[in-house]
Image (cartoon, rainbow, N blue to C red):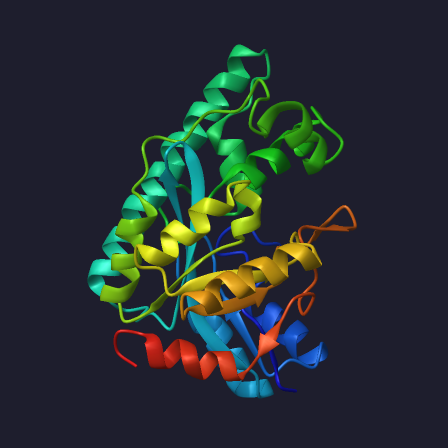
Length: 282
């Protein structure tokens, strides 16, 4: 009971399970703490915190914000942010608007390919309308394609249409830089961590971001092997920064867990105290 999974997603973005369910699974996995880090929204945190109070699991308020740097999509995790900070909430709305514009572009591209998908079908698959506090993304488009019978699984939807380089892929509209988002998170009282740096296939970026304001790196991730985990941990330590970790749990679709199960990657709970200490309001 001294471990924490600092990267999970819920139905507030592209996860399968409600925030309270993630907390329950953390309890069942023997974890002391879990972070809720939905994409560009904090809508799931209140429910998770209430569940955490009931079952004795600490819930770390977090968010995962999408950015772009020299043509590479970079995700930044923010921990112990003030989820009621009006400036942060306004900024997250702008982020979700970017996602909505991209979703419309993907649907239009699929229509050009002869697949008459509509945004209404995507909204139904997501269980929400665009413009709400929760996000809609490519996994919901994939689910809509499954429901329409175009593909058998969401993985097939990505493999055939939605992954980068596939015919239905659309680059997102211009996004802000990770350096700017480090500032957003700090201004909202939080600590900024570069998510899954090994997935960007450019290790030099990780060091650059540490030098340019990131508080640390997500060294431990379900898609990092032991060598990558050691490299990013040592890189963070070299610069006096934090090495965090989490499963990046999204839930299971058609029996396949996306990234990893809750508790698949964890850190000692002592990391939480350090995240709070380094936060702008800690």
